[in-house]
Image (cartoon, rainbow, N blue to C red):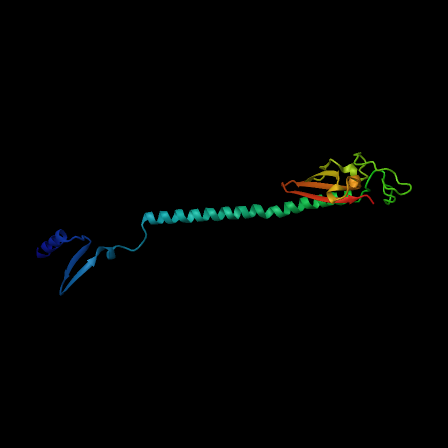
Length: 191
């Protein structure tokens, strides 16, 4: 009875209800109820942890996804570059103009004896000179589409307007089936 009285009196008078007075045989103890409570995590703490970890994992997955997409881009660009380079090499191997003789000498439009006048950028179906490739589209390859533009370009190189037709700029645009696009340009001189 005496112990009940003390615990009631202590709980009424105490401002901290979490402290209990334990009277054992020969000793007096104060114990804290927080120390008696089992150590661990609350449900709210576990949910908060799971939310933070899931957000971090989502961000990490997006980074890996973008890296996988960008990893294919160099392959697509290389395929388009190969198509464009092959077409540009094909065009540069042709003679300058329809009236250019085999071997290129004498150059058409030159003041040399026996030289014919240049025909200009005139498109015909035989594709035997650089001018024939103007506005040419090649979709025969399954992995890329090619378009070509040929323009007179002497003034682009700093020559007078009278010599503008003596140089041509060949611009090849290749678009691969993956969406990569490459533009290559080269100049061809009448020699």
